[in-house]
Image (cartoon, rainbow, N blue to C red; front, side, top):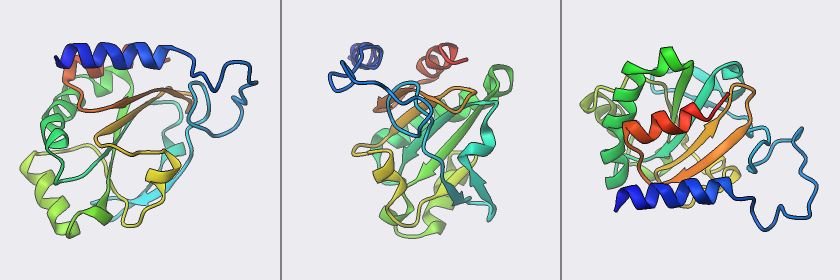
Length: 173
């Protein structure tokens, strides 16, 4: 069942949206269409630093939106961590996990979650709504695959396992 869902997501991603048909795509502008520059943002991390998405240009980015209370997010986190440990360096990938902190009770809840899952990739804290709206995230987990030029190539809604992550990353430049 999950395989069918993932296949459907891949097919939907490969299709040109009805909106884009007959429209001139502005690939040199920020946007959410395939090939457009991923909207930039800066957020604090769980470690007390700040990260800016554009700083990862030159690397492929798995941009994941999630929350501690989300059962599919809990299911996905071990797969993200396993991928990060086994393939991120080899595949030139950074995982950027944006926690919808404004929906969680406290930052300490996020820290406990990250420690409980032994997460070592960057966790960004979105303490107010905004970036989720920019990225039109309505369901979590929601993942954007961004190529090394900083362009969105895929948007996947729902949890991904390690094999699906690897397959999606292979399609990025």
